[in-house]
Length: 161
Image 1: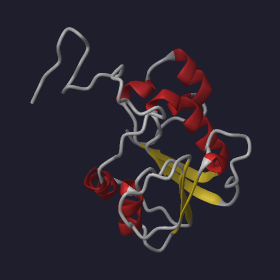
Image 2 (image 1 turned 30 degrees about the vertical axis):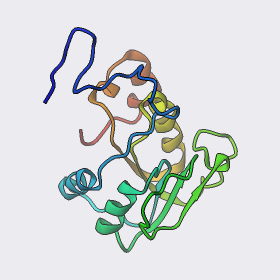
Image 3 (image 1 turned 120 degrees about the vertical axis):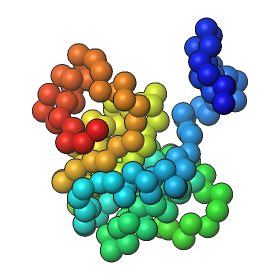
């Protein structure tokens, strides 16, 4: 395992690397989502939206734990590489941050791992849409900062970290 070095690289990750995905896409392993969902002390019932479903790895775990919930998955791009057998909607029309995002009513929960480069607008939009709650995977440093406190956490403090 490589460690941190003076160039700001950790485990060979370089955020300025030429092969970095333009939309900050990095798939979350299904097993990791399963680990997280297994530790959550409450149950999500109703309609769940995953607005940045990518290749479906998170959706697979969500379906396993919340099989009786209605699950809607969207992404700005078609990325599914395996048949995860889930209904999903992709393309420019499913840009979660656009004013024309078509799925914005009757959503109980949003479960997502948004692109970190646009994490704040994703969370603000999720708070506008979700009627009951949000489960978001993100870097711990997202909790820092006066602006994020004012824009998000002052009125919506996290219940679990």
